[in-house]
Structure formats: structure tokens, C-alpha cells
Image (tube, rainbow over all chains, first blue to last red; front, side, top):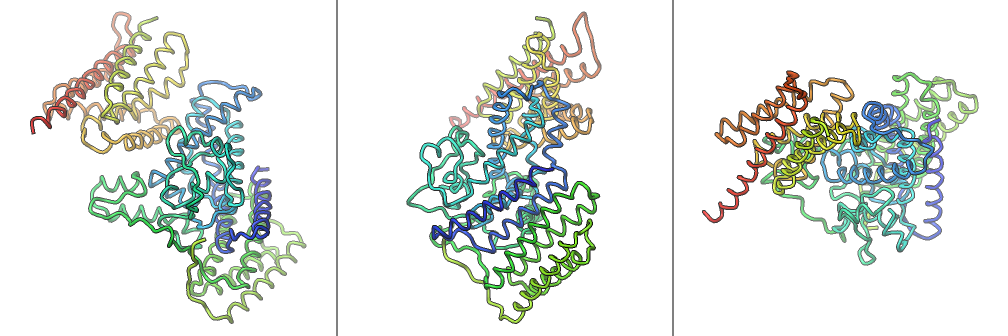
Length: 411
Length: 194
């Protein structure tokens, strides 16, 4: 069983705990559209990762086999300690490159595209990261750190990074100066001047202190989350592709091969000669992207997200028994689920109708047992009930007037 | 200490010295550091002190597929962004290393690194001759001779093909180190002349 199958329910449970805790503390750290988009992006990312068979791990295994220098006994504790430090160090550089090189930023930007900061942001991961980031871990393979140790250390690091995406944990004193903590990571996700390109560490913040990229959260200047060039969309597919599209446009229209190379490898702030840089933003006047969120849509979004979660878990559990095309189709269905929902969130033309069609087809297929594998009777009944409930909610929505796009003030 | 280890140590010494001195040429420094690291591993391997053959082979491959092209870029376009900016020199190295590892280690196409190395030193030599920059041309010629004797598996009174490779590369890097020093001297004199 893939470890992610156990991790995802725990992450979702912790997310619910954070929602309840934030309500109890009277802090509005969640918005339905943003959180649902984050979770959906996470599902798509994991689906893609599974489809391309964990590129990082496969490349890593091949390198260990072909150029691994030393043989390590995995029963020795020092091997794990060495692997932990190596992984954390290399993660720092991978993450730093992810922020400082356009092509890598295009892959990583999706994680920073949320204008909220909560545990759902931790799930908002890129679908294309794995195409590039394996390169940074090659030194571990060259040394000969076994695949099992690498995978375990990477998994523990990923799990550790989940909890730092929260606003509910305050500064932690000396811990903030050694480990990556929520305070450090809040700073990393900010678009304030002092938050740009800082705190890249995964578990230890000491690498940032050594290499000069450490910044402390300021009490007198609250962090404003998001990007300098905001995404302004709920579309999970576009969130993954937006910066690639920007690079592609740059490659097409920027004159000279040097400029074209810079479009791919320069810092994200780079502009060709003669093109002015984007004006600095006034943090006090930043407005978060928001679209109307009527009550019915909140209920629908949460149920659709829950359905997406069930589908995703099912997909994970059966994925190894499906052929690659079937697996891809199932993964695409999960992505389509998220995409249709985002169209409705954005109040796009025919957004509700398209979502209704999607719900009708998906729940209809499930209820009739025409799925990628055998569907138990109880699941068929549940799908039928969910289908009716979804369509009833959407039918109610069709009768409501459409509100124009609006924006919310600073958090 | 045998001849192989000795000549690898010579190459390591020259490469790391050039890297040390090329403070204002990040691409040259990075290329020479890579070649120096490969030579240090070779010294350890052939002297029997720390035999890590797979690591030496990998670093040698990176030397051919990454360091020599980077060296050529640094010498052919000394005012270019890659030659002068550490960040871009690193990006060049990481991208070409990724390409090299994919092609040589994963796909098993070993001629890739040879082609990269040959292409780089021929360009270096060609540029030196065209610009009548005899130091750079001598560097390119030594590197080309080193690669050709190694490819031809040339042997002479107890010396292995690898020995000629290391001697030739050490000579080539020494010339390129001189070339870099002369450039810096010219740069230092320019403001006074103006």
C-alpha cells in the first residue's frame, strides 16, 4: 500500500481540526473556494505523481545502481542521520533554485498561489515538480544512500512540512532559529518585501542562516500571503500551467536567443532590456481574489470536495490494479472534477450547467456500476443519493441571479 | 605512488590552482573545480588511498560533458553572462550535467561526453587561432592533443593512455590559467589608459 494512502486521511483530518480550532479562536484563516482549490490541486498533483511513477524515485534508484559509490548498512543509525542531513541540505538548494530560476519557479509557483495560509496550502502542490527536482538529489545517489532510506527520509520531510503551514501556531522562540516552524514558513509564503526569497529550509532552518536567506517574521508587519503577480483564478489546471504559459509567450515574442535563454533560466523578476520591471506592490492595499460565495455554493463545494477525496482515495487504492490508460482516465476524471468546480466558483458562463452535467455523468456512472472497477451496492446507492442532492443544489443555483466578481480586503 | 596517480595529482594541482586564481571568472573557476575534483578522485583511486572507481568515472564524465564546454564558453565569450555570472555558470553546469547524466548514465550513450569534450576543445582552438590569441590556442591545442591521444589509446615506454590525457589536460589548463591572468592584467590597465 502506498504510504500516501495513510497520510492523506490524516492530513484531511488535521485540516478539519484546524478549521474547528480557527473558528474557536475566532480567526478567519479559511475561505471555502481557496481551501477547496488547494485540496483539489493536491489531488491532481498526487494523481500525476502516481501516473508518472514517481520520477524522482525511479531516477534515484537507477543512479544508486549505476554510480553509487559506497554500500550502506541501513541498520546503522548514522546512515539515517547522514541521509537526513544530506536530504535537508539538498532540499534547501532545490527549493532555492525553485524560487530563483524561472523554469523551476513555473513548477513551484502553484504552491505559493494561495492568498490564504493554512493546512490546505500544504496540499497545494505542483504536478510538474517531479520533472525537474530529482536532479538535486543525485549527489545522495552518487554517495550511495539506499533508495529505501532516501524515500523514507523524503517522506518524513514532507510530513514535517505539512504542519508548518498554519497561522494558528505562534512564534516558538529558540525553536524558530533551528527548525523550520510555522513562523518561519509564514514568512516564506509572504509577498511583503522582507518575505521575498527567504526561508527555504524543509526541516532545519540552519541552511538559511548559513547561506544568508533567513528572515524572521515581524510583529509590526503582518505577512500578506500570495504572489507578487497573483494567480486570480480557482482553476487548478491553470494554476499549474500559468507560468509555463508565460515562459512560452516570452520565448515566442522576446527577440534574441540570449533573451530567450534568460526567459527560461533568469530569476522570475527578470525582464528583457527596455521592458520595465513590475512596479512594487503596496502591501497595505493588496486585495485578495474572491468570487461570490453563496451558502448553497459553500455546501456544494464541501460535498464535491468530499466526493473528490473519496474518489481520490479509491483511485489510490486501485491504481496498481488498473492498466495505464485506465489509470490515466481515472486521474483525468479527478482533474475534471476539480476543473468543473473551479468554473462554477469563478461564476463562468454555463459554469453551473457544466458542473451539473459532470455530476450527472459521474454519479450516474457510479450508481449504475459502470466504473473503472466493480462498485459495491452500498457505493452505488450512496452515489445515487449524492447525485440527486448535487443536482438539487445546482438546480436551486440556476434560479439565482449571478453576482459580479468582487474582491476582499486584506486579511 | 605510481605514474597514473602522479599525473592525476599534477592535473588536480593545476586545475585547482587555476580555479583558485580565477576569482573574477566564475565559469572558468567552476569548470576547473570540476576537473580538479575528478582529478583528485583519480589520484585517490590510482594511488590506492581511496579507490572509488564509479565516482571517478562519473566525475570524469561530468568533466567531459560539463566542465570542458563550460571552459570553452568562459574563454570564447569572456564577457558573456555565463562567463561572468556565477549563477548562470551554475545553471549551465546543472543543465548540462542533467543532460549528460540522462544521456550517458541512463541511456548508456557514452559518446555524448566525448562529443561534448571534442566540440568544446575544437571550438576553443578555433577561436584562439582566429583571434590570434596564442595562449588560448595553445590551451586548446594541448586539450585537443590530450583527448586525441587518449582516444587513440596511445602508449609510450610504460606510460598509459590516461597519463597522456592527464599531462595534456594539465598543460592545457595551465595555458588557460595564463590566458585568464593576462586578461585580468589588461582589464586592470584599461582604466588607466582611458
